[in-house]
Length: 392
Image (tube, rainbow, N blue to C red; front, side):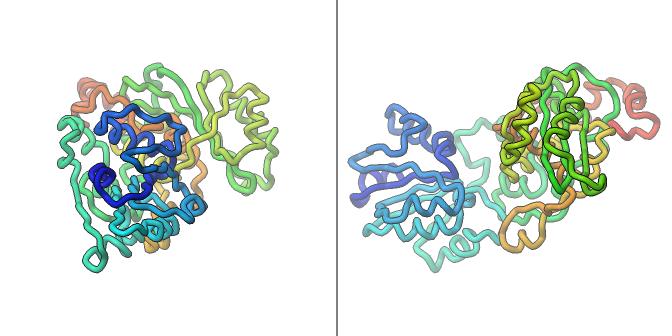
């Protein structure tokens, strides 16, 4: 792309990501480091490079099409192209209209039914398109130790996509690695801090969970307490004021740093804040939250106290929507998911990068068991004779 900016046909260019923030994170630092130019500010929407105007455009949803209508471009670069709406992509192709213009794009694979694969990558021989497939091991900028640790973090569809670079369908149970080793029923070490997540329902259930977070001690995330009010089963919906009173009582003397709530729950947030509860808008990116939770569950970084019955039940039953999979989309079935949404808000908001420090990341699962519990008799004391019902 840099070579094209220097020597390609004259005309404007465009760098595109899911958001302006994602461009600032994923593209601009590397680009400007190579160019040895000072970084533009995070609010900068266009720059001049090699006599061209380069626009920075976020394309979070289909409404972004309006941002590029009427543009005439010599080149464009798209970061994480599978996350870009299809109408935007089609409009972009029509805007790269100068003779000799080129489109550059990078992406992680998703479902084999995704529109970008079916309509473009699979038809590369028919189109003026060249496609390269790189594996994690092919990246010379990554430390080999980091690569090995990353390989340990993912399982299932996410391992195939992010590690092996395969286009594979997300299907069946979403949190397939959740088992008895993710469940505990014993007081553990004091955490570094506490946070909570809340999914708000009027005609549906309202769920809230409190988590103990210990970034440098394993397991790092312990879901300790659950509030769950099902208005359908109760026969009436509670008012925002009643729910806020319930949550205030539920939190009690737990010194939570934040209560992450669905950004759309405006009236409830006002009620909660009036009771001096530290409310913050949750990160409601469904796929990011699911991916991060799946990774933490698989590595037993995330454990749930046995008394959180609704969350445990819903995690076991949380499934991908097969009809959405056929359309090339990753979507969970929207049924009996309020507790999982509450937990997802908490995880996605408290761990914005999708990672947490893991002091024992080089140890195997059995080695971690031995490190935490010592000999097997202590482990049996923790679990009971059945060796179940615990997080290890």
